[in-house]
Amino acid sequence: MTEQEYQQSLCSESCYLQFISNSKSKADFFLTNDKRFFLKTQNKREIKFLLTNLKIYMEHLRKYPHSLLVKFLGVHRINISRSQKKYFIVMQSVFYPDDRISARYDIKGCEVSRWTEPAPEGSQIIVVLKDLNFEGQYIILDQERPWLLRQVEIDTLFLQRLSVLDYSLLLAHQPLHHDERHQCLSFATLIMRTKRSVNPRSSPVYAGVAAVPGAVPEDDCTLLLSEADGSSLKQPQTGDASKDNTLQLFPKFAGSDSDTAEPPDFRAQNRRLLPNLKNPLHVIDGPEQRYFIGIIDIFTVYGFKKRLEHLWKRLRHPGRSFSTVSPQAYCLRLCQWVQDHTK
Image 1 (tube, helix red, strand yellow):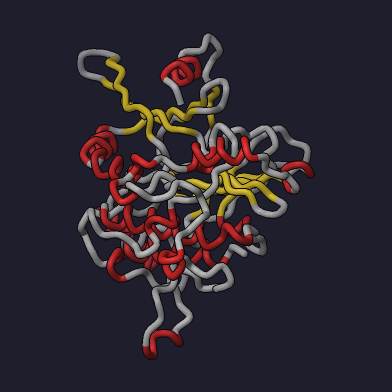
Image 2 (tube, rainbow, N blue to C red; image 1 turned 120 degrees about the horizontal axis):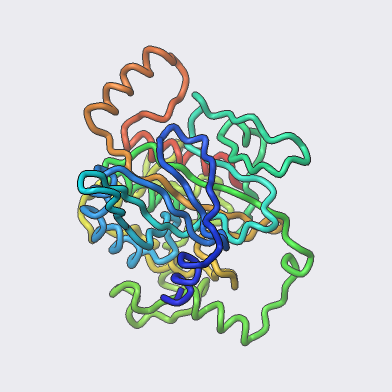
């Protein structure tokens, strides 16, 4: 986006829209009048965490330009008095444009406190539903499914390295119009979408690679995840481990703290043909539905308080899944949820 677009949204004469959240945090939420950007108040600890990790966050986005992580655009402070300060961040809204969105979900991959009463039929109130509300439904993507599974894995492993938990997978969907389902790409449209989808400068690894999203050189074909494989997050199978049908992570990427660690399908992962929309990084089209998907709320660190909360919840909710678990368990569980709820 251009600086002018950013300023027009934030500095519009129209009032911001206040968003009433069912979040347990005491943060205030606002939307710009065009609903393109979110403003959220944060405490000093959260701001410090973001600024401390800003460099590696930016490196992750350069390395994976199609990442589903929320896009932070600004960090600001208002000095209310000499002693009182208010911090807030500006984020790109995952649900933009939202004109036709029929349902919104906040997914954590667990069951305790993960039900929200839906709005009455015909109500104008927008309610963000949760995990248990989504049960019995699927994200139907067909050919895009392996890409989504892999990208969720990559992004959650990055958060695991930061010892972060309690983040959410935002999900919304809307029906595709007939012309959107059966669109024929003209050569000019294909070129335009290709230019938006691939930035050759996004990674040194990309230098010299043909910038055609979806076109994979023959020597890279073995690196792509099989679209027909229901367990597409598995590592290449060897020995007896190939019989295990549980989700597995690529060992080189999952077990390394190095910033240079790369999954084997690195180049292919950055070749999704983005839709021609103003929010293309968070939009994935299936055969019948358009999905808005993003990962938000990445400020909760697994420190001493969260470890105590984990022990307390184990006693209070025996045999049930809850949000406060170790970053590794949280990462695996959310990846498993996406795998189980996609087709």
